[in-house]
Image 1 (cartoon, rainbow, N blue to C red):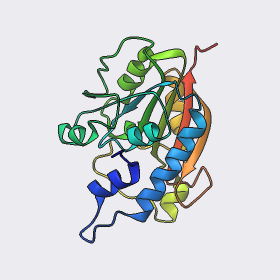
Image 2 (image 1 turned 180 degrees about the vertical axis):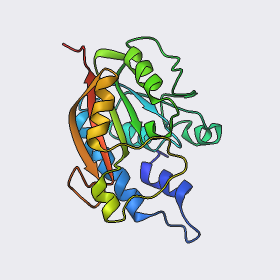
Image 3 (image 1 turned 90 degrees about the horizontal axis):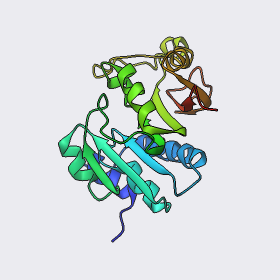
Length: 206
């Protein structure tokens, strides 16, 4: 039986009633909609950083994408992700053991805010994406607007906090530029959204 990303997600994130959060599922659907619009070539070589249980791997395979691999540091999650990708690896973001110029797209969904040294991760990504390759991030929005309306929580697992403006500056300082940005969450405005997703390329791309 072929895997379905939604049933796979529900299996691992359902509550005692057997239901997963409708908000979380809607969030994943929005992210996937954005990703599929940015990654149109189904022959693209894709890396999913912090792939967790493999939700995005299944979704891409369901859509007919031919080459997607994932990695995560958590061995338990990787057991769930096995079979969701062409291959999965146990790996840390600061030491990506892939050949240079290997990927057309590198995806990192809500990963970078957890890293002690996100700058190292960006330099590793610059090595493994092709010169014309793209890097797609998502990260929570730490905007003043969201603070004022009480929509910013304190997550002890997060090491870094950005607004869209400070994230754009951070990326530029590390050799990336934003080509496009979308929002996830109930608030559609970029400055007030819960999460923003950015499509980036290397600054030296011609």
